[in-house]
Length: 167
Image (cartoon, rainbow, N blue to C red; front, side):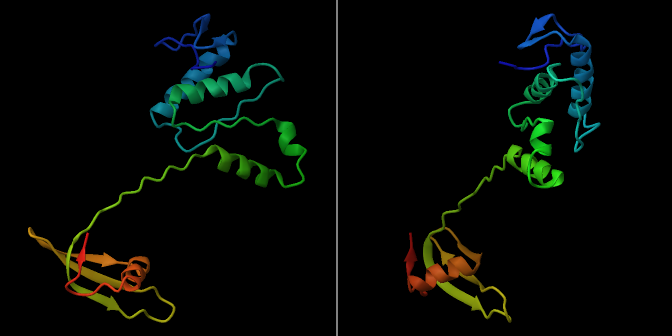
């Protein structure tokens, strides 16, 4: 239900906007913090909101996160959660940070095909990984690819050799 801090462009709080009501001074202060984050003035640092229970600290924090965009992680924790755990406070906070950080892995897959001209496998050093090169020829060009252990093992398993066509 909270979609932002409910501030206008001059950082003045609207009476009711973006799911926020009340706490106008706190919302204005949060707007200043938000602007500093957006300008990179406090990037990489934490913001601690303190106050009595039920004063809207979580709502303001959620408003800041929403205003920063969908890529901004948000995790709410009560102080009692930290102090009632049987682990260290540092470990509890570390776990909360890990839960809130979303890791997105973008993977590029390159499709290679052509006639195998040559496969060179470098002898691994003591305890090292296997590396090698695969040279493929198509009607348009000839290209050499550097391969790691996994690809070399797959080629070996398939008994690929010079003259074979990979599609």
